[in-house]
Image (cartoon, rainbow, N blue to C red; front, side, top):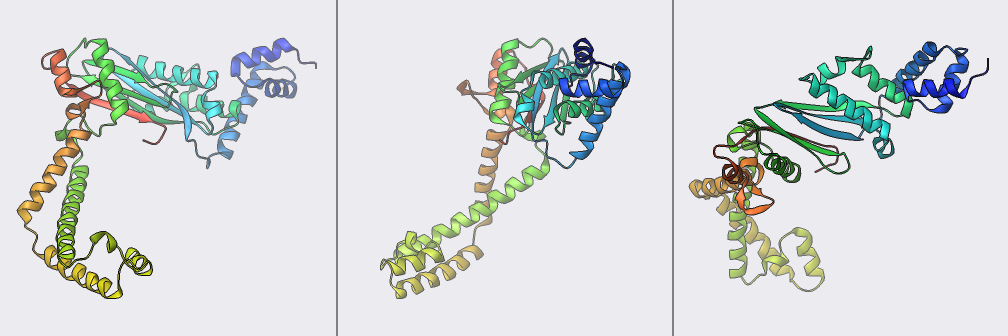
Length: 330
C-alpha cells in the first residue's frame, strides 16, 4: 500500500525518527502505526547493542532546582553534532524535569522510572535509533537542603547545584555560589569534609616536595661554594650537553656528580622532621584554601572568601553540599 506523507509525519511525531526510517517502517508494516513504532524501537535497541563499545564522551548537561531539591542530568552521545540537536536537548530537559518533579534519588531510579509506558532507559535506547549513535545517561547527581540553587554554563557541558543550611536564600547569592563552583571546581565544602584519602595524598606529596627542596638547596649551596653553576649540572643530560658545548670541563662534571651524591645523601639523612612537617602542613593549608569552597577566594571579590561572602549576605548562611558535572576535562 502507498504510504502517505501524513502517516510519515504522524510517525515522526510519535518517535522523532527520520523521514526515511519512518517511511521504511510504515512500508514494512503496511501502514500499521503501532507496529511501525515498535520496529523503530527495536532498531534503537539494535543500534545501542551494536555501539555498546563506543565512547559516549559528548552530550548535554543540565541542572535544575526546585525548593529543597536540585538535580543534574548528563545525557551522553558520541558527537557534539547530536549533543546540540534540539531534540536531544529537549529529551535531556524532559528527563531532568521528571527527576526534579519526582525527587528521584539515583541514576538507577531514574533509569527505571516509567514515562508514557516506557522506562527512561528504554527512552534513551530509543534515542539511539533516531541518532544512530550510542546514547546513555552518563551522570545523575542530586541533593536536598533547606534551599537549593543551580547553574548551567553556556554550551550545556557544565552544570552545578548547591544546597544551603537555611531556606529562601537570595537568588543572586545562590547563583554566585553555583558559578563559583563551576569556575573554581572545589573538592569539598570545607576542610572537614575533604575525603581523608585526598588529605593523606596531599600531605604525602607536600612532605616529599619539601624534602626534595631542602636537599636541592643544600646541593646548590655546595656546588656554588665549589665554583660550579648549579644550572649547568641539574641533570645528567645537561651535564653531557654542557661538556660538549665547552661550558663545563670533564673534571668539573665529575666533581659536581660527587657533590650532588654526597651532599644529597647527607642532607636527606639529617632533615629536621619538625621543620619538614611545619612546611608540609603550610602547603596542605594552602591546598584547603584553594580547594574547599567555603575557604576559596570569591571570584567576584578577591577581598572575600565564599564563607565571608555568605556571612555578609546573611548571618550564619553556609553551603552544606554541592555537585558539579563537567563533560569537558577540567
